[in-house]
Length: 291
Image 1 (cartoon, rainbow, N blue to C red):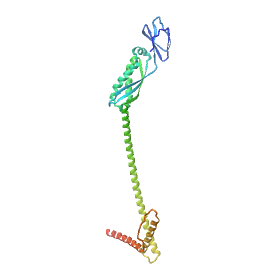
Image 2: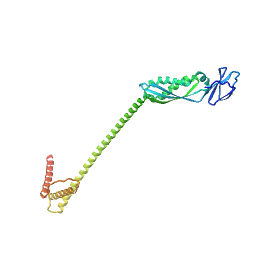
Image 3: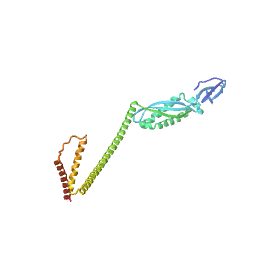
């Protein structure tokens, strides 16, 4: 607001509006530009109001529904309405204090009904409620509320620390669940792989034994046909002795095996052959008894 001027002329800046009085009574508004005043007739420029948008930051402390004290920072953009500049000039001595008082009133009436978590989600609703109240009140004084922004919500330091710890604990819990699921999948896949490996190993051993059996059968038949006067028993004894010496050779060539003491000699070889034949005969007898 400007001071009273008793000049013959005056200039009102752009984005401003002048208040012209006659003998101390409001007469009219002066638009931007150069103006002449009739000082002899009691006309003068009482003051000038800016119509630019002003910003006011209001910091309000209040309590939420869950008894948490918070600081809310509201940014209010307001301006003087040109057509109602006389109301703004004469009605309010300090519009900033008036706006701040209404912000306090609305915020402290609305926030105590909202929990802290909901307040962060509904800060737009709080700003809207403040805007509606200020528009209704300040409009009567020649002011227009352009925007209201809920800039920040600041809980107490201990509350913020507790919220961060809760969030960290929840994330650690979720990470533990994912880690457990990953270990479960790993163990299941490992067990499936081991089972598959054992199955394939068993198939391989069975095929190996089948191939050995087929090879022995063919060797016995071929030897019996080519060498006259030999029986299947003699051929089997010869093959068993050959396999015995091959086993002794493999044990000797392997550098990783420990020392093994086994009886060795012609008599021992004959005993081993008799033990194998007796085992095969007992197995055949057991199959006949079961039938």
